[in-house]
Image 1: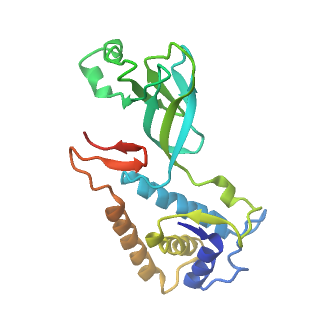
Image 2: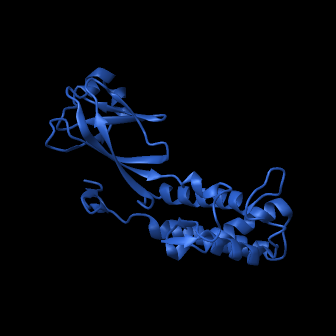
Length: 236
């Protein structure tokens, strides 16, 4: 659910008893640590906590063109983690690609491992900012690939041009309270603690662990879970 950044700002000021002068909303060159900087740090950290559970919050879907005889493709620049890939080699049928199991190389060569890949049972690897598909397409296909990935927070939220009155961020509503608490803890680390820090820190740590427990997918072997309206993934 999207919520105005200004709401988090006011709550963080309440936790810390700082003023807008002590803790400015926007960073200015040579100025103090700003709310936007703290928000970016805390928000990014909380998103990564959610991603680590295997949850599908912040999921994005994208398409890409298959290029004849091309194995390497560039990941979206805002990718935190690639979840799924589907490929349409023949222009009609979609096949889910499986991530290549490198442990197989202890028993076989790379060439032998990849020889098992086909247009109906493709494989993929992720290396740095790219992913590789096996086999290579023989024919170019417009929008012949689909991928689902966890998307990083938009950097555009954290530039000086953003208006506090209109900018929003998205986070699971039941855990929104963790954001201003985390910002307060960041500030105490920079400006010194007060009597409330230990209590807030304990509440924050407990809240993060609760969030991770409740968001973690509850799938068992043989179950599937919905990724979006057209896609199911899970342990099969």
